[in-house]
Every structure is written in C-alpha cells, then in structure tokens.
View 1: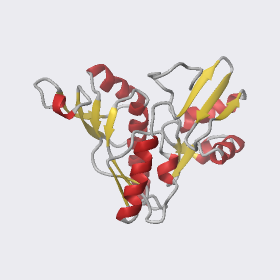
View 2 (view 1 turned 90 degrees about the vertical axis):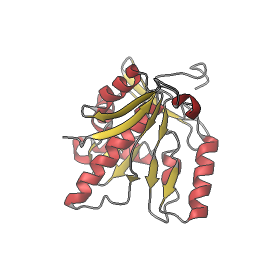
View 3 (view 1 turned 60 degrees about the vertical axis):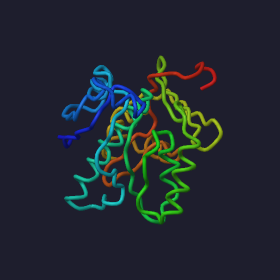
View 4 (view 1 turned 180 degrees about the vertical axis):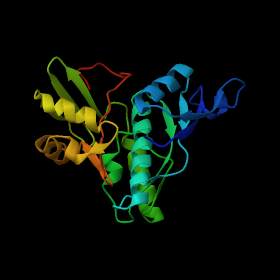
Length: 223
C-alpha cells in the first residue's frame, strides 16, 4: 500500500489570484492510485498544487526505512509528473547527493522545484536556473499508438525518439509507471530504458520518467 500524501491546492496559478475568496481548495489527502488522484485534483479545479516536504533521493539505500522512503519519493514524483502533464503548477523541493550533477537534467521535463538541496548553494542555484530556463511542457513524453509505443525526449537538447512494437515494452511501462521492481519487467526492456535514461532507480524501485501529455501547447507534429 502506498503511503498517504497530503497536498495543498488552489484553483489558479497566480499567487495573487490564489489569495482571493474561493480559490483555496485546502489540504487534500491522496489515498488512492496516483493517476486517479491526479484526475480528481484536476476535476476539483486544482491548478496550483504544493507537495509537502522534500522529495529525498538520498535516503534510498537497502534498509527497511529506505524502502518506505523510496515509496514516498516515487509517489511524490509520480504526482509531480502527472500534474506536470496537465500543466498544473507544482511547488516542491528536491534533495540529491552533493556531487549529483545529472538528476536535475534527468528530471528536467518535470515542473521545476522551488529549491534543490544537497549540492552547495552556487551549484544548486545554477542547476535550478538551467532547469527553469529550459523547461517546457512536452519535453519528455510518451504516446501509445495501435500496436506500438513511442517516446519523444528533448531533455538533452535534440529530439530523441524511441519506438517499440513488442508487447513486453508496453507491459514494462505499465509496471514501472508508478514504481516497480526491476524483476517485474523483461530485462531487455529495462536495459533499453536505462540506456535511454527513461527510468530512474529510486532505492529498490524503478520509476518511469516520461509522461503521457494531457495538454498540447503546440501542434503534435512540432512535438
């Protein structure tokens, strides 16, 4: 069972508008599957959501407490990813190892965090500056067609496309979408996903990074 995550939500993106009567939706406990809870937030009118605490990617070693930490981190990342796909403004914080210079790029398709903890202040500020300056909706997404899946990834500057028509790739995405064990998916699919940096290892869990976009900001051919 996933831990309960309680978020705070408003009906508008703008801080001044959020202060107006009727804009505050309150603290909302997400107790069900993440995809359904994100649908519920959207249907409630949530357009600005605050995820409490820090998404900690440093406390995920192979211990009992780390297993819980991994589940919490994956749950929060899944909420951020699914809300990003709807162009919801998400307020959140990230903690990485002090020498980690790659995770901010790997997660660069997500709504940028308010702060990054772990690296020294100049490095964290620079990572945030780059993340915020380069972020846009549709940066790393996947779509499912008749008998195939395709990932379109622009996190590294150019467009990288990964297309697979083998059923076990679709099954792997479904199993890892909200965090899954490496042993639960075909080894060749997981190896390919890691090679393309489409999954993130969070403790004992493998987490699927791309989102299925819900709101197009430009013509599909341009994406």
